[in-house]
Length: 447
Image 1 (cartoon, rainbow, N blue to C red):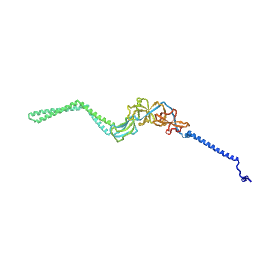
Image 2: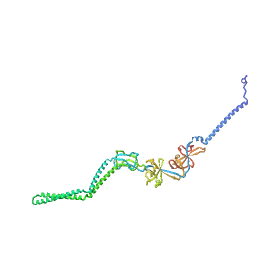
Image 3: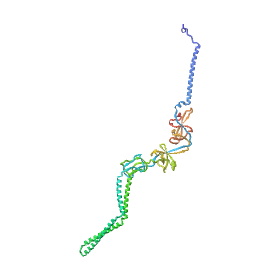
Image 4: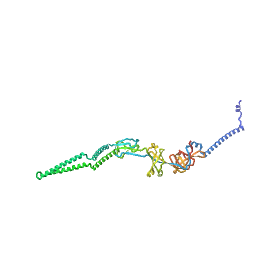
């Protein structure tokens, strides 16, 4: 019979004391192990909760910190200033060219942008009527000069001899008429003729006497020559005709529009066929050989510049151009409250400049103030007229954080500012992107 069958057939007995003690020991060991695990878990939780109450999650802050670029500042007891005074580039001479007389525009020989020299013909008016008048006056002048020459030369010998012969002929006729009158009077005394015949003879004598007197006067005039008054009058007539001709020549010359100085045509204001009034602009000429900068500066600055011979710097589109002081206006502009300063720009850059460009006069100086130089991008608007910036400092756990500082703006330029305030020497100031920061925000330094 097997042992299993024997156990099934044997009657049941109660467990012994040793068996119970072993069972209880095993249960105690399990409970003790569970208690130990629970104690470890509770202790760890308490430790972590206590550590979280003392400081933020350092690792998390380091990973999510905003990268920033910084610049280390150093206190300065003075700073260089550079003030820019705005103005514009202008040509030394600009003229709106037109004709001094009116007329129809016949030809324009240049276009916008054309370069011209002094005296070049730019445009022409229709002058056909003036040319006809000139030809007429030239013929009249020739006639007046010929007559003057005749008067100055005097009568010819032939004219004098003919006048003398005429006078002698009249004198002989007068002698015959006088004899006839005497005979008629004798016959009248004897009643051989009528009174009418005597009167007729007497009339002939008086007529011949008058003709003889006139012939003698003409002969004497020819022998004396032309009177000076008549020569002077004819000379005056010659000069009058010559002056009229010169006036027409001037009018023809004024029908040609010439360049008064070398330069470029910047604008064309009229085309062929237009009937112009005197003075109407046709072309605009700009002198490109000489360029000036017209700058408005405060009266105090104008007094400092007056009489200065050293070169000045003018900034045009970011480029520096050497300039020489030409003149300073004697009065203040009532609208801008500035004094006009005219600067002659140097020849090295003239080909790169054009009239109308914005020019800025740069005047350097030095101010005795204690503060710090920062980039413009490091500032943001503060309160009560102040500005602010951010510095990077580490907290107690060594985490870099942005700390806001108020500053006062003393001087500003295009890329940098000079400030004073709560900054300290050697601190690291955030260079840019300050609008993304808040006071106390965790940051990390960009490479």
